[in-house]
Image 1: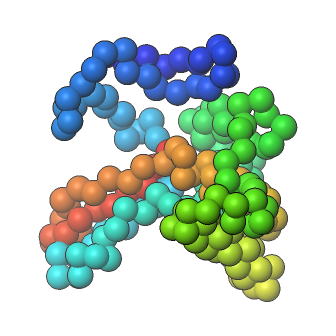
Image 2 (image 1 turned 60 degrees about the horizontal axis):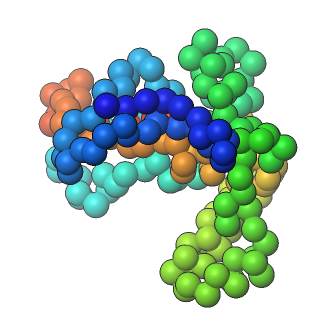
Image 3 (image 1 turned 90 degrees about the vertical axis):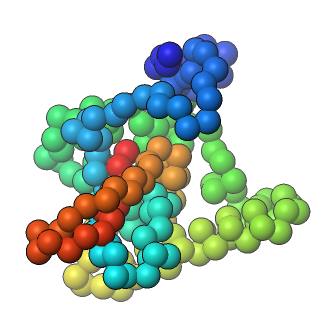
Length: 181
């Protein structure tokens, strides 16, 4: 079985397994209505399969999270409760900075090329998304690099993507991809 809890020594909170479980075993059901929907995309079966990738790590999902949960004064009750449960700044005791928040010289000290490259690319994605937002009149979110970096960290650590066989309104068969927190 599972339990929601907080480790008193580390102040970490989350979902913990109270007993072992096997690979592929059904361990938890989360009703869709209890999630915050960040993205929903339909892929027809005629589209290339590689286009239907798991999407939880996309920067645009962090932007949607900021728009929907953090910067929206008219949250749904679920979004408001969810926002209240998150470490929304580096001052929160539940926040422990990961390498996403390190400087570039600190990241390069990791000396693991694939990890260093991934972190530096993610930093650049955030930087370029903020610059694009600053240079566009039609972008509907005003966000700093620090805010977007933090939002992306929250999404990467808490969102998940599901793929489900579906039929579009016009009868086209395909996959429905949902990214939720």
